Structures are given as C-alpha cells and as structure tokens.
Image (cartoon, rainbow, N blue to C red; front, side):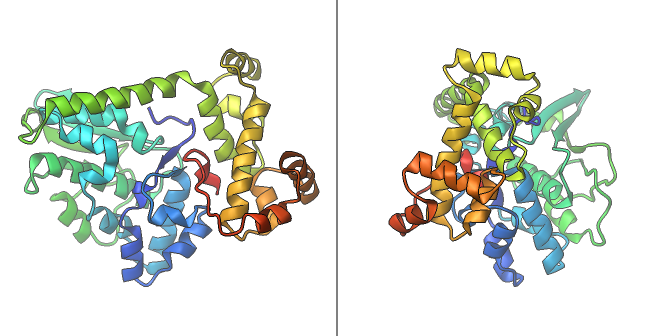
Length: 347
C-alpha cells in the first residue's frame, strides 16, 4: 500500500491547520494557493489532494511562522473521528492488534503515500511507518503524532510508547515532542517507527462493536477491490497529478504504474477505456472546475491542464465546449461546482 502510484490523501490531513495558522498570524488560504491546493482543503476534509502539496504547505507554514513544531501542534488536536470511515473501523475492533491491522489495511484511504507494518519480536512490537521519498520534517511529525494520537484513543490518554523513531535530525527544542509522545524520541533513525509491547496489542477495546466493524469493513473492502481492479481510475488519478507538471504522457503514467506503454493500452482496452479518452475527460472536468471556481488567468489554466500554449488550449476548449473559455467562465459565473475527489489535486 502507499507506493508511488498517485500519492493522494484526504484533505483531513489539514484538519486543525487553519486554527493554528490564525493563532500564529499566517494566512492559511494564501499558503494553500501557494502550495497548489484549492482553498477548500482547509474546510472540507474529504477531498483527495496531493500528499506532496500538503507537505509543502506544512513546511511553508513552519518556515514563515518560525514555529518549528507546527505540524506537531496541529496533530495534538486530532481525534480518531478525523480519520472518517478508517477511524470508525479501527475504533470498533475488539483488540488493539485487530485495530492496527485494520489501520494498516485501510491506510491508503487516508493517505496513498504511506503504509504501515507490524513487526513483533518476543514481547516487543514495532509499528513501522513507510513514507514517500519527498517526505520532509513536518509531514513525518504529523504522521507520527497522528499514529500516537490514534493509539491513545484506543489505549487511553495515559498510555505512552516505549520508543519513537524519526528519520530526521533532532530539532532545536524537544518539549512538544515529549508532551505529545510521552518519551524523548530518537532521531536520525533508518525509519519512522513506534515501539510498544505485546501486552499493548492484546488490550481489549471496551467500546468495540463487532457488527458495526464488520459492516464498515465490508464497505472498505469493496473500495479496496475496486482500487485494485480499476486501472482506469488509477490512470485518471495519475493524469490529474501529472498534468500541472506538463509531463503527463502515456509513457510516464505507465512508468508510475510499473508497466510499459503497450501493457497499459491493453489493460485499459479490457476495461473499455483508452488513455486519450481518460485524459480528455479529466481535462474537461478540470477545465470546468478551474474556470468556474477560480479567477486564474487562462494561461494559468492552460498550464495546469498540460497544454503547450494558450492557443492550443483555446482550440481544444472551443471544440469540447462549443464556446471560448472566457465566454464559458462568464456564462457560469457564481455556480461554484465541486470538482471530483480525484481531480481536485490540481485545482
């Protein structure tokens, strides 16, 4: 799970960002725009957006405010309910072991760029967290603090891990780390990890509802099966992620999916789809969203949709919408449509 596929995550990863930004004198909406994210990410937790862009947003916030522990302070207010359906299925498991297994299985719904794995040696349990190559300090801090907050929701606020490992260097101050984790973390480690005991794993969760857990798990399993089967959906997500870089070729998408161009075409054909049709559909949706929901100049819209020039975009738009882009924007002013979850990453 996680991998290098589309690397999108729920905008719930920014829950609490707006409040702390206001507290330390930052303009969160300007930061979102600068990071390449729609400002809705600050108020709508269920958008699918670029994990890398969210990471940039946290890094900019920490740098501009001088608050080195910015992401930790955001995570400190997190509740398991912020994780949506994944949080529900975790909370309803009979034991912490089962809860962590569910967490690992469905983590992709929260954040495609991270995966979790349990390693058990004797009485020691290590929850390993594998992050993306682009991960920086703030994102690592947020991920680890969220995991510990989840464990505390299951084991009680007084629980603390035996050890916490970070891959980045130690910060100038450790007080927030100690407050959140209950121990002094170890830095410059080879991986992100939380060390606990087998006894912790076997702890029953008093509020568990096995029937509810099964119902939610069935729903999440259907999503997981669809995710693994529908290549066209994966291609669509990748197109949205790659278009703004101007490098959205069928070869590059195939490379991200670990196959060659011919294999990609063959597998899409088996689903009744083609790369060019998916590309066209995504561009249409994104164009409509960008023109209606933003005041971006047309050149900027053309760039985000991966066109080599404004004239190429104008010609394509007139063919698809039977009118110029500027006329479309005027005609639909004030409609404020909501883009699909997959394509909001570039909006």
